[in-house]
Image (cartoon, rainbow, N blue to C red):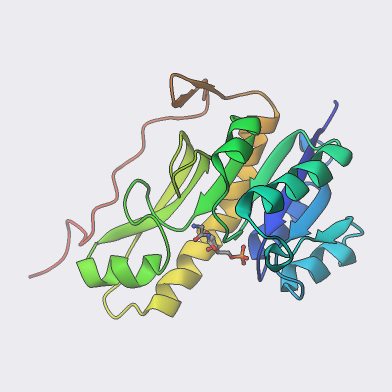
Length: 220
Ligand code: GAR
């Protein structure tokens, strides 16, 4: 099995990066991380990559005069490392159209909501403000608009009464850590592909009971 060479872009904590690092340890996992790039010099995720002996780079957006030159530096580093698939994992910079175009259908992102709902920042606060009863997370192919693009996989979970941003974020994050390795496996193995702006080819999807929130058996 030849493993796809994966680059990961981060800006912070890197817990999703860690989940991908762990997944790549499985002998049958169809991807390996060959480079981690952070745009933030002291991002915690850099230390996680170093511990796993994965090459890291800091490319600080503040050192660049424009988004174009910053993205060109990212692109050059990824090509130099012969990256085949790119994963944004808490990378909080919007890419230029040129960059997105050059990585089209080879570039994934994870977002902590059930897209297309609640794109952008402060996701969990907005979920709570709206009184949404179900939230979750999404892995999708990247398109120029923020948190947009063909959906590879999603996980859904109930918003609990009394949830705070922190408690909801923590439960969604646990789901993210399972979803991202799963989605990357589907893409890296070639099990799924983009066709007409939809991801097709999933063989494992099966019918499951719906999540009702509040539950149907709630006593009133
Ligand atoms: C994750 O919750 C990820 O879904 C989110 O940032 C967090 C990064 O955590 N990404 C976005 O909101 C993208 N729009 P991590 O650094 O521990 O993986």
